[in-house]
Length: 309
Ligand SMILES: [Zn+2]
Image (cartoon, rainbow, N blue to C red):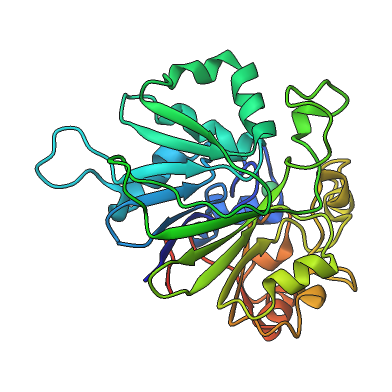
């Protein structure tokens, strides 16, 4: 049985974002605290005891406090159920939480060599000594089974695949420490329970839904998908900035090439948006945008929501 806990559903900045006075952020600070959401990450376990994080957000410390499944076991002076972290990209909202795991507990980081190169090039991550924290390269389209601290298998098989996207924002127009190969900056993951053969897929950043991606997601019991913006120009339209969704490597929820329309008719049981920016009006319960996505069979999870497969 696979258990998946949504640690956070928000895009970079979270809800509310520290310097933002948009409608959603104002409401989240005020009369609608239920809008508050931490930056996107999930935890997954095949045995309910050992857990793997998919991405480590800057809000990780707060997320771990709020998630009983990830607390140290009773009676143990030093312990964590977290056996590893799988990184799907090198953005700040995917890797900064690693710095909150620096207190000497062993775990393994799994990431594409391009993302491992980013960690290696930034000496602040050396605080995670390689003696305790192994760094394991993963390869596109090569399934792997993450291992537990004692070297035993986790019971999960994970297949990383490439998704149209961009490299981390802070590396634009700079030399990428992982070289110029175009693949590896943005990965999706399909995670399968070896015992039951049930699986789900996780795509936190996606610039385009290709036919290859559609056939990979078809028939999946559960999909977490990039829900950054409702429409491509919403940040500009709301006066919040100059970036488009596409410019940041994210398709919109709406529109003919958006996520809702592109993933319709693929026989996916449960469709869940993740990585939702605070500019996205679909965050507001009762908005026309929220109604439209729910009518199309999608949901926006609250932090802490657990899915069982
Ligand atoms: Zn805002």
